[in-house]
Length: 246
Image 1 (cartoon, one colour):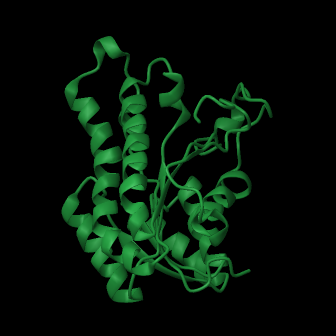
Image 2 (image 1 turned 60 degrees about the vertical axis):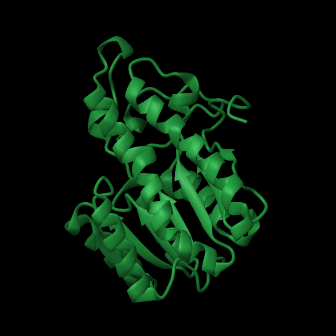
């Protein structure tokens, strides 16, 4: 299959879960994929899987909380592949996402912003010249329904992910003239063994599969099929929030 034939894609947080599934699907659809994550061993496993399936992948160790590492990673991808057509901002630190508002510290909130909208902004800025040169650049940012719902106990995460949505809308307005679309994905997926617990309260009563339910939505936005959508929050969530995100 060749929906992304000849395209060059960066996927952050690509060593596991949705990021891994997206990187593998992009490669299967013909893209050259840069697999970004903080752990070299996990990156190598994803790259090996892609190459074993006949795809093309480059592993890049990158902590997106470090602006110098973002710039270096983008430079490495451009040096290897010659440009960038697609950026998927999926990485996030899950270790400090929960806190009631009353007990939320500025330091914890800052960590969520550093790994969310601030990091996404930096990767977008670093990739912008190449996305513009592509003539049909794509940015797909991962937000969350948690922010829309105001999920109890997840104040810092909710705030950071809603800021991602605001960043996406702003960039969509500004970068449309450059031929770049910028969209959000708000998934409900089994990435942390959630399938072993109770089913979510969505219409389909199940968690999504990164491979079967979420990555194909990201592929849609990255492909020509999604060329007329920008500034949008797409919600592959099994009917968790229905129309409340629109």
